[in-house]
Length: 142
Length: 67
Image (cartoon, rainbow over all chains, first blue to last red; front, top):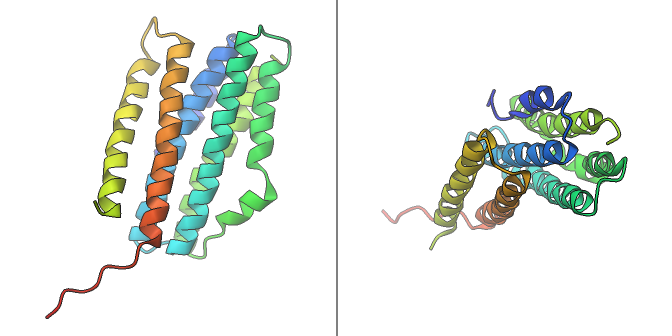
């Protein structure tokens, strides 16, 4: 559980990165990896009895939503790269991703009653949202 | 094939994709486009795992064996 997310390491790697397309692709890969691990972890929490099947279903819905947002982010970055980099294009992709994840309707799916289960789910979700915010910051307007 | 078996197959496929991404992530000479392609494959596998896990949750609980 402690190493579900490599995202914080990604953040350190991205700071100072001068290749915005490469930064976006690496971020998308690492966030996608985190989502994969998150889905597996959430299922194991249900097997352990720390979250209910209904709670697992809701958290999976959030992770799938985040997965869709990651796909859109990757496509956005590829389009920005292919069409020639206009200042702000890549940052706009990351900002859009960030905004999607903070959708209140989706965030409402994350309620878990068991405190340990809730902590574990928070680790998963915070890893994603922190990573996406960090990418937007690291791109610095590129 | 039962739902749990499908989930296991998808998990195996996912592990393969994750291993591929981890392997190419640090390699010199790998292009961003190559990594993007592998990432797209991973995100598709995530979709498949989501669908399978949801189906597993919706499946009726197995009946206890008759005495």
